[in-house]
Image (cartoon, rainbow, N blue to C red; front, side, top):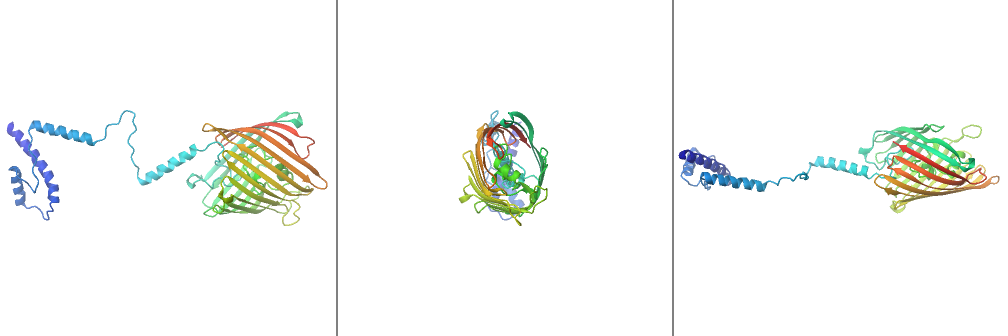
Length: 436
């Protein structure tokens, strides 16, 4: 039994010596293969307790010493390994590969943008309502096919008819749009309007989106209030001035036409739009000749909160030009406040006119998704014709309750003297709207 133990220890020592001798021979710079005589001499030296290639063989251990060495080895390995994680502790972080790191960063950024979409911030919208809706979105987030829709229900009580309640569907819009590299198209309809078709156009652009060409039916570039998305507008209607100019006298609004656009972001966010559009319809129902419209907007000194613009509209531009108007507008967004103002001057068939519009709103966040939006506005209209003279005005105030960018409730009160009214009237209204 004792001899077996010696042989076992000898075999272990020989194995360790061989493992230690291999790197030692490499470090010693041996240039040729070891001969059989060298190997025999090394074995003899090892058995006799000598030195092999400068490496001393390990000391043979007794069983008790062997167990102690094993314990020491286990202790060293335990110190080298990281301590076991406590229950509920987070596992150690592992750096991902370069490609995985980019994908993970993009995913986190997308989640952050989604979490930061608070009430009042723009989201996916109709291109006809907001032509710049997709310009600031990463290409990876722009869907090729988008379905657009919204619905609004309104209840009103007007002093002019003894505060009789009137319920209506103010908006029932649905549409579809496509976005490709250099081509965008959209068709939208309002099922609650007598003229169901709202937008139906194609938009071509270069790779950098600096030059665009519109063709079809869309908004003419006239009046900042008209160009504002009706969803982003904090009041229920566009006001008596816009209604009087675009609906009563058919200047601006949505028309069939062809328009070019230039957008230079590096030059104070300069944007120039100009085009020709289908003419209005006269009292006899005949279509008049084409109209022209143009608008220029800029952010002075690259001051992001401020945008100013000038727009113009000329009816029958290639013929009589019996109606025309010029408007100057400004918008200031600062510390939760949004203030817009616009002044218009022009000529109608009954004579010259002027108008002014001012609207202020403030956004108060309540939690991560809810917000309250107080709003107040004033408008004035002056007619200075030889046969028709008069003034109109409007005061509106209220507040909106917003849930993200998908739902809103608007409670408003307006006191207005509209063209044709004998005295001002008070109107209370509430509107609930949602979009998808």
